[in-house]
Amino acid sequence: MMQNLPYFAVGEIVKGFGRGSKQLGIATANYPPSVVQLLPKNLENGVYYGFASVNKEDVHKMVMSIGWNPFYNNTERSMETHILHNFQRDLYGEELRVCILGYIRPQRDYNTIEELIKAINSDIEYADKKLNDPDYDVFKNHTFFK
Ligand SMILES: Cc1cc2nc3c(=O)[nH]c(=O)nc-3n(C[C@H](O)[C@H](O)[C@H](O)COP(=O)(O)O)c2cc1C
Image 1: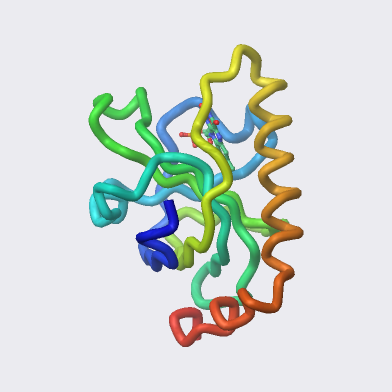
Image 2: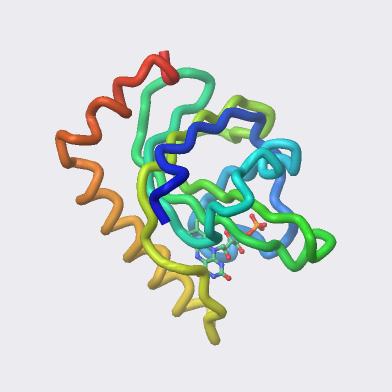
């Protein structure tokens, strides 16, 4: 799981494909296929944690869902990032930088949206605690984000 980590990615934030983070109440920043296609093929799908910045502003904690989006050709993977920061603006077209540091769990098929929301909130809680570890400061302060 950890063999490809840390993994650094940079790209434009584009619109998602439909299920709608508004429905979840959890905003996600999506990468275009060109960025997703650069992921190592053996980087397992699932939920990850790490750091993120938008337009080289402050570095924040993030959780990311990596997997197959059934709404996009069934063959394309997607990378959906939730940043642990309350942005007061729309982020479409801005540059997202992420450093993926650790794996949390596989993606699951939940029966209800409430269960999915609960799972994502527990991912956020886990990442929030985990990323306080001073061992991760080197990535938070990495030149990649400067
Ligand atoms: C941290 C995190 C964990 C997620 N875990 C799952 C999951 O286990 N199963 C799943 O079907 N979708 C999961 N998702 C994806 C959401 O379903 C997705 O973000 C939502 O449907 C919005 O998609 P859209 O931006 O393409 O509209 C997760 C998203 C995030 C940010």
